[in-house]
Length: 76
Image (cartoon, rainbow, N blue to C red; front, side, top):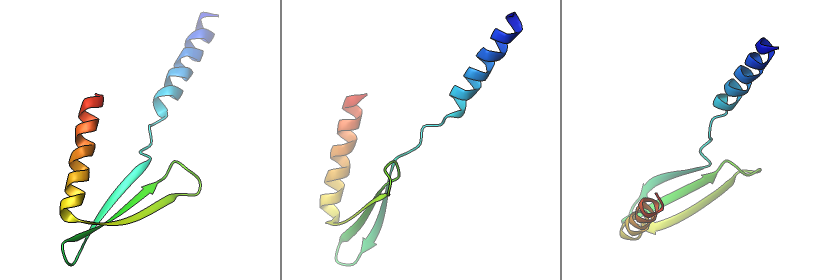
């Protein structure tokens, strides 16, 4: 009986550790002429994949990234 419980616990722990947390959102940046940036955001966790394309002026995009970093630091 002891062996069965050990095997069961071992299988459960292996199963739990094998499940990786998948990164859902990826962001790509492409430089465009005239001080612009094209931002492609892809969400892999929904079916079908959500792809969002936006263009920003470089200074706007830097402000958005800075704001996101601040909120992420405050959440932790």
